[in-house]
Image 1 (cartoon, rainbow, N blue to C red):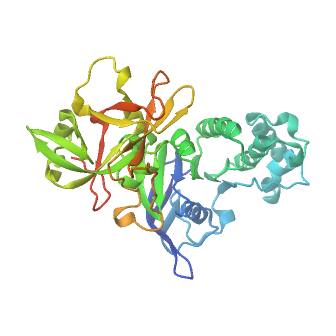
Image 2 (tube, rainbow, N blue to C red; image 1 turned 120 degrees about the horizontal axis):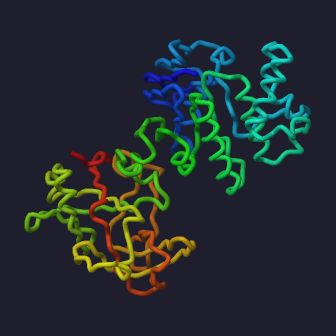
Image 3 (cartoon, helix red, strand yellow; image 1 turned 180 degrees about the vertical axis):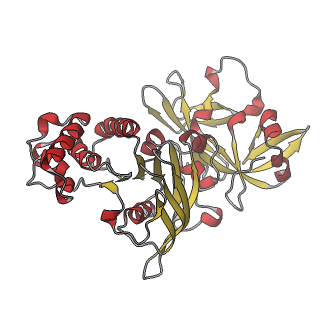
Length: 397
């Protein structure tokens, strides 16, 4: 096992395209770090540079205490698991798992022993004589994992290994890969575009956008304390409601005005974040997660009107354990690519017939919200997020 470190790593292609810009990552020995981001953000390019499949244009890459910028892929002592499994169809499971060891001229008895142990770990013992075409998608993915395990590498690199599986099998394999990594203790860099995979599997998660690292932290901290509006909007499903607003000071309290409606910011939030007062009278971006919005009719105790908004229901998605409720507000949305992020990636949010933007709440299944009917919602003002619209950065401290 070994630490993997990227210091100011860049990737510039011959046509001038800058795919990775000054990437700094420190993956601790035995850590499971996930790279996540939208398509084209550079996550697979970063992984391929660690593997040696892409040349590094600038910066330094360490595996252990050795700079490996110019080290051949086969000499980096890493094992890679690909999206398409990359199994040899004419070989048995045992031959596929042990193929890299055969190439390395490992003695046959040792190959057989390592293959047997890997198969036992991955529940493949009964399939060792089968060909890949006789296996399910999940079993083929286990074979690909087995081929990586037997090499006993310093690090695992995984490039969207679950994207070809159906939804139910992905959930199962997520748990299996995470558990296997913990048992083996091998440093792992895992690439995915699926934020659910990232949040449920990684010890830490690194969010990339257009080749720039946005934030790297534990899954819970990314969710609770997004560093900028992009991370806030990207992490979480349904996405955080992001809207343009204005802060005002009334009676010593801080109020947020969304279109024609107002909410008072929790005094505890203001006390913990005094820099909010410097935005009084200015435009601001406010984020509210769907789960911090609830049906006011279900409130156990009466709440003040300064934490409530009035609207109506435009769509209900009943999911059994929860209800996703869509409602309009005359608050202007802030797309996650606004500010310096604006451009072709800006997201057009849905609007109703009156031009109001549709936002989303995650309600209890006991909610009596009905399509087209008036709706009063409670907002947990202690959990609102605030961002500087000119930079997109979170306002804290």
